[in-house]
Length: 347
Ligand code: NAP
Ligand code: ZN
Image (cartoon, rainbow, N blue to C red; front, side, top):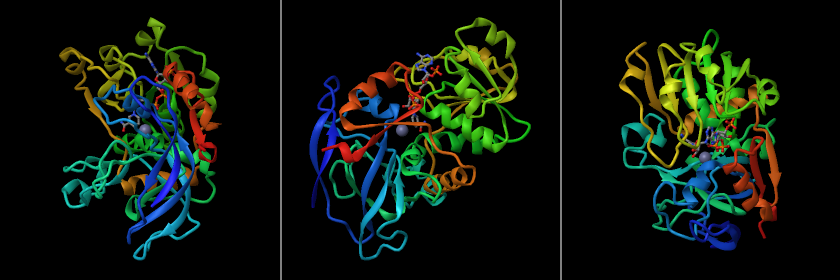
């Protein structure tokens, strides 16, 4: 067992604070990872603040983990000490259901085991990446290709794959008009990946404040959704819209921007339900769908794709004492475009 430094939320309302947690001994098929960077995902905040339902406190969140293998179990054959690796939102699944057999562990019919807030196979609660080390089954550990630095790789493990998966599934590519709603952690990866896939990319942001960045990241067009003209100008335009917004939106207004047979994919996960009118779906045979992270094979595919196209996240690396401030800034949409914790500063 290893006692390691971490940062935990003590309750739904109190600031995060330094703590120590215990990591289990490395099992035969497990690896010990020395975490170097942990991204701050808005899901960490929704979870710790109890916005998605009750959680057990204190909770150590973080599911955008990049580091180096420090120890391997006796039967480990996929990783060796010194490998650059990542862990995303899951650390295990049943491996037997149709979803798991198809590499869709995120849709495990028996429920995948979350990197934090879950219960591991050892019966102990799982604790995430705001810590210096983690022990994970080798099958849920991803290879980070040479050519992507670990700080800019960390956010790919959640934000990257959460956008890659729907863009891939709905065939973003040449000739396709794709819109990304919200230029935050997920959204900025969506712009980069959709552009690299060859799609024509439009950002739909609350204002034009980040327009220059959006165009630099690969967007062809950028519109402010605070301007009602935007919805008239873009009516019927898009084959695919991916909504990354962490708060409720007027979905009816956005459905009107879809072309015939277009799809709006919800990846944002706001606390409260959203309504949609039947008459936003009927005209143009429009679809409203959702997508959750990506499976393990697809996550590796995404990392390889990002390496091939020279893509990483735009990050602001922070020390542990800035985590609470960073959370406030994420909630205020004041992030360009992912905060990443340097875990050597945890304690
Ligand atoms: P983020 O960095 O905070 O980005 C969200 C963006 O949404 C903001 O930057 C802002 O972009 C826009 N936004 C925020 N509040 C808004 C409001 N009231 N009205 C309109 N736009 C608003 O968050 P994130 O880490 O990218 O996560 C986004 C959401 O996805 C969260 O709900 C998170 O839990 C969820 N998520 C889902 C999955 C999945 O598997 N489906 C995975 C990870 C995260 P602009 O300033 O450009 O408007
Ligand atoms: Zn996440």
